[in-house]
Length: 94
Image 1 (cartoon, rainbow, N blue to C red):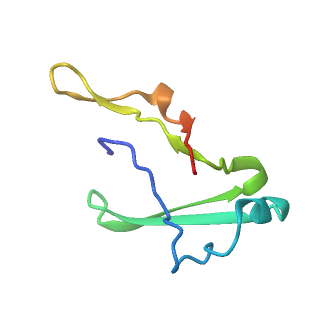
Image 2 (cartoon, rainbow, N blue to C red; image 1 turned 60 degrees about the vertical axis):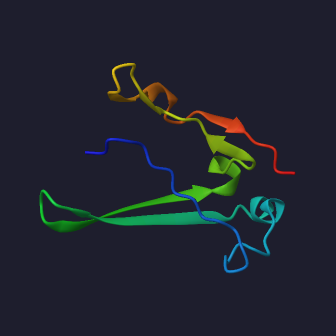
């Protein structure tokens, strides 16, 4: 059970394999990002893995960030607004 949403971020810096590749370069070649997340399920006492792939032409939105879907009610109770789970806003990259 997740009590919040997660956003995984890969910072593109000098150590990143994407550092020398522009978004346009990756989009023109329809590059694919394969993401694998490993975790541990305490209920079943075992390792769990989730893997997804994202093609640049179909799934990658450059210059955007996810909107906050996790909020607190006035009582302080955490709430997840699932209708906002895929919402995003454009950001200024300059």
